[in-house]
Every structure is written in C-alpha cells, then in structure tokens.
Amino acid sequence: MRKSKPYSPAAVKKRELLPKDPYLRKTPNPDGAVCAGCGAVYKSKRWALPGKGASVSLKARASIPAVVTCPACQKARDKYPGGVVTLRGHFLDGHRDEILNLVRNEEARARGYNPLERIIEIKSRAGGIEVTTTTEKLAQRIGREVKKAYGGTLGYTWSHDVKFARVGWEREKEGRESR
Image 1 (cartoon, rainbow, N blue to C red):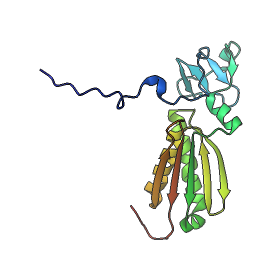
Image 2: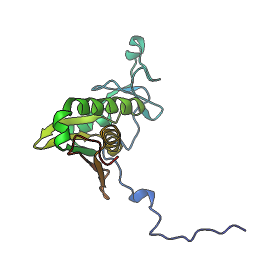
Image 3: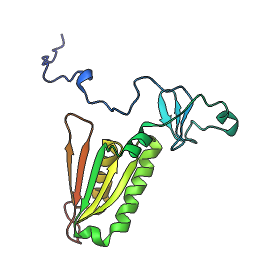
Image 4: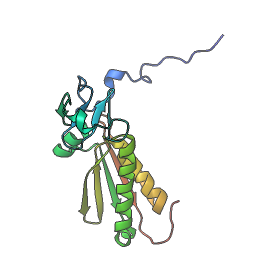
C-alpha cells in the first residue's frame, strides 16, 4: 500500500490563481495568422518565426486568414515589461560593448525557441544599464548568461501577483569574483 502525501490547500496553487499574461488572447488566433510587426506565424496554437517550421511562401501570403499583432509586439509597443535586468559596476564601464553583445546574442537564442521572448529596450542609466524584456524568463536567462561569462553577483526578485522578474547583476573589480 502506498502512502499518500498529506493534502494541504495552502501548498497547492489553483490554476485560476496563478498570474496570467494580459496580452495573451482568450480566444485563439486563426491558424496561419501572421504578425504585422515581426512576421511571426501563428500555427497550431503557437507562435513561430518564419523559417522555423512555419514559413509562409509568397503564394500562401495571398491567402493569409488574418494579419494580427503578436503579444510580444504589443508589449514592446506599450512598453509593458515582463522582466528588467539591471547591470552595474565598474567592470561594466570597460566591457560595455562585450556585455551588450552577449545580451543581444542571448535574446537571439531565446527568440529561436520562443519568438515572444524579446528585448523591449536597452537604456543607459547612471551607474549601469537597464534591459527590459517581454518575459520574466528571458530576463532570468540574460542574467544567468552574463554571470556565467563575467562572474559577479546576481540576484533575482519575482513579483507574486503579476508575471514580472527583476534581475540584478553587479561586478566591481577587474579580477574574477563570485564564481
């Protein structure tokens, strides 16, 4: 006989109580719909980039069921971030271009898996750089890759009521630290 785990309502999150993305449609887009902003194609309840299994030929474009705006383009237009990455420290001053290239490369890699993961904006702030992303997962990935490549300290803060993550990376010295 198998022992079952004790049930605790406090330990179980109900699906209705989990935070939802307000930019995801409640009714699905028509199959084959194309985003007017980025060209992503909606196929089988998923967004995909052209050339990634959902390419649209010129002949097929004439019969596109709908031209819509994908959630990532809507978030970028409204500047509605799902995550914020803050990069700080004296190390950043000497390696700004390298780190920004790493951030853009990580966005390109993530966008290959999910075209809704994008960088909304990269701002230079006093003492650092602030990168806003469309998803909290992309912010987490960018922070993890910067720490893996350059060391430093990394911190995560997640919001409990909305899908939002704040990621902070900092490195002061030139030598390797906090690996």
